[in-house]
Each structure stands twice: as structure tokens, then as C-alpha cells.
Length: 397
Image (cartoon, rainbow, N blue to C red; front, side, top):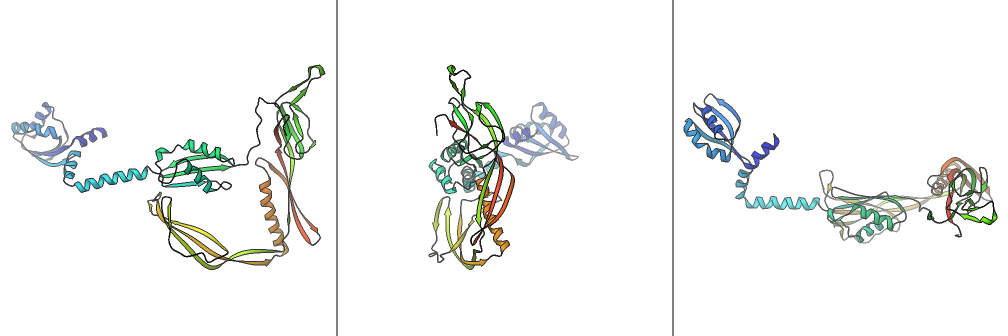
């Protein structure tokens, strides 16, 4: 039904009113001559309203004369009549065309580039790398291959464990996940040992290929061979067989951080003085406005970006950037014993989280306070369970 109405609209039609005593005869004559009528309705005892195509209306004059009815057009509908009206308004038509082209261009271009999830790799580095690939704000979306961009960023940044590239509307979103660089993997066709990457006590060992040299409960040191890739024959004349050792060695490990308990700490506070640096930008072109020189020696900054937004999501590619500088001063304060221990503990916990590798499970944690001469120290020891097996090529270091 919708397609039929759309077809009539594109071809154009008229709404007519047929007046006379023999309106039914008019309809019958039109039907016999295959003149299409639709939406027929009686509006008064002597008049009927109906819709008819443009060509049908031209052919219906004979039917009107034979049925002795008067036919008048109530209104004209459809695309041909709209185009006829706007032929005389050339400026309006030109404006509509320009508007349509601008909308197409604005929705076909990347107006903003968002980098998410990075802390180790600087945002500026990633922006520079995608610029080398010819991707800037203002680049056509069809010229961007998300998979190629993701693969290239992965190859250029060893600190990235995953990269996802997505074009959403006029935004290019690059989401990254950072991880510890994995140890070198020995090709499977080369013989190797499984060695310990750190000291510990063996909890369990699973050997899939090779010869186990340790068992549950053994104390091991970093670099010790745990699963050998050299398998000696029980008969010396047959020599040894070299294999690619494969296995998993779970061990208890310990990580320790020592921090001095501070008696004082230096805190930074704002003085209340503020200085602003303003710039106007379009895409990646930025023009700083005259604002003088930063008068502060110790400060912190924050950036405010003000750009016009259409609706809730479409952000226009121009605006004003205000960089605010807040003057700071340093103040030294004396800590009581509880505050000092808490400060030392927070510092140690932060360092400990950096030391413990991903995948290791903390099973116990101990905190110890010790005094050495005139200073007091806090020691946090974390006991973990982790896989300490790494591959080492036989003959390698």
C-alpha cells in the first residue's frame, strides 16, 4: 500500500470533485476506459470526491461530457507540482542544494579524534602516528581503514596489548589496552628449557613436553631450569634428545616494599590567583590570542574546550580553548604517628601494585614496622601464587 501511494506521489495526481446527477455513470465510463480512480467518497447527494492521475484527468473529459457531469480540480498533489512551484524560486533551490552538499560533507568527515584507555603511551604519540598515516581531523571517513590503523598502532607500540578503531558518526574513536611486554617466545621448532622468572616455592608442576627437574615443595631461584629440554637416554650410546619443553610451574612468590615513615609532608595549595591563556581553533589549526606571559613559577593547569554542539552529539570542529593556570604554594605540615603510617602505607601499596604481575594472585599480605637508628620504616610483603615458567632457548642466555 505504501509503495502504491509513493508511486502516485512521484508521478503526481489531482483530487477532483464530480458534480451532477449521474456521477456513478462518470465513474463507470472511467473504469471501462481503464482510467484509475481511488479514494472515492460522496460528499453530498449530488457530488463525489476522488483522486485521479494527471494523465487520467486529461482522458476523463469525454466521460464528463457523456455523463453530463461537471468536473473541477480541488487540489494538485505530488512531486511534479512541487518542482513546478520551485522552478521560479531559483535562489531557494540553489540554497537547498548547497545545504544538502554541506550536510553530506559534514557527515562524511572526521571532526574529532578520541584516544581512550592509554596511560603509558602518550596521547600525543598516538596522534602523531595516525597523522603519519594521513589521518587528521577533516579526513574523509571512507579513506580510513580501521583494521589497518589498529594493526599499524600495534606494530609501532610494544606497550599496547590491544587496539580497537571505530568510526562513530563524525568521531574517530581509538581504544587501547596496555599491558606488560610479553617475554620472548622460542619458536616451537627449536629446543628450549623452561626456567624460573623469579624465586619461589613450587606449588604444582605440569609437564607437557620435556623432563621435570623440580617437584612440589622445592625452593627455586630465578633462572633455574625447571623443565629440561634435554632428555637423556637410559642407554648412553643413544645419546640425548633435544625437545621444545612445554609446561606450567605454579609457585609461591613474595614481593616486598620498604618505605620510611615520614614525620612531615609537603602539600600544595592554591593561592586563589589565576591566569588564562585563550586560543581559537578550527580542526587542528590553533591560533593563540594575545594574553601575555605566565606570571606563576609554581602552578597547575586545566583545559576547558568550548565548541558549539548541534543536538547532543554533533560537535562542530571550531571553538575556543581556555587553558587556566592556578598559582600554588607549598606548605609543610607535621604528621602525627597514625597519619605518617597511613602515608607510608599508601605509598608502599601503590608501588606494590606496580610490582605484582598481571595474573598473579595475592594470597597473603603482611605489614611490619621496624626502627633503624633515628628512622622508622614500614615494610609490606605480599605472598602470591603465579606461573613463573618462561622459555629459554637451549644454548641461549
